[in-house]
Image (tube, rainbow, N blue to C red; front, side, top):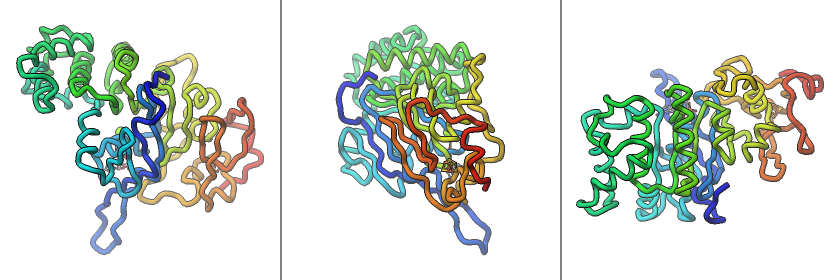
Length: 344
Ligand SMILES: Nc1ncnc2c1ncn2[C@@H]1O[C@H](COP(=O)(O)OP(=O)(O)O)[C@@H](O)[C@H]1O
Ligand code: SF4
Ligand SMILES: [Mg+2]
């Protein structure tokens, strides 16, 4: 891990985000609990992977951390300063020092602007360099992400998907960010191009000390790129820790199912849409007790009613009632606790 300081760059304490759901005329208004009580931190220069099935709340959390989503409860701190209901200057600093990269590189750039104009706009609006120096800085940023300075004059539609994502990264770098939230930023690209973009992110992390929240479906990329990983299920982080520990010894049955579903022979396999069978429950009606209990092969009677305890082994943290000891306690998907478990 390449940290330049010992304190977290970004911290979230018990952050929750909800959305109203439009109900029928006579039904009570309900809310989607997209993110529930999430606590996490990202150190300077660290890459944190965020994984989980579609709809588990990853994008909402990423946006909430950057104050792009209203936080119903909890607080976010950036560089030690509260930004949720914080001072305007602290929120402005967060906006100045963070950036987001999206899945669809074409949608994140204005199709009517040239790549150079898109990047120059950021430099101008945020007063990053003096006007006469803008063209040189645009050329420098394009080179930085592996594009040619002449490509400043082309429009997004004239670039390939990978080139366009590089241009999106150059635009994000124009902010001189300390933290980038990359939301499924390689998911729409061919596998070979994905590798190139991941290599670019790794290089930027090394050379610029960038912290990255890497939201992804592809567990093999997360394992390669990320120092730590957090696994989300129905708006909650159910397991987190150093990537190697989580991938080698998953402690939560949900993580174990995700990891077991990646065949060794196909390292590029993406997160399975249905790792455990059955639909994930709706975040409008989250099951009581452990939210995972309707799909958990190890569920016990108390899992239906009691919130699971938080367990810890060094930096590795997970929420599950089952006791596990030692480093090698990997959940097998069959056997193990299954015989002892009482089906719910
Ligand atoms: N603006 C919104 N309005 C209502 N519901 C939303 C909104 N954004 C996200 N959701 C809901 O919140 C949940 C989490 O969504 P999201 O954060 O996009 O998950 P992920 O990125 O893991 O796929 C989903 O049930 C989704 O439908
Ligand atoms: S708390 Fe119970 S239901 Fe939840 S993951 Fe652990 S065993 Fe399964
Ligand atoms: Mg998403």
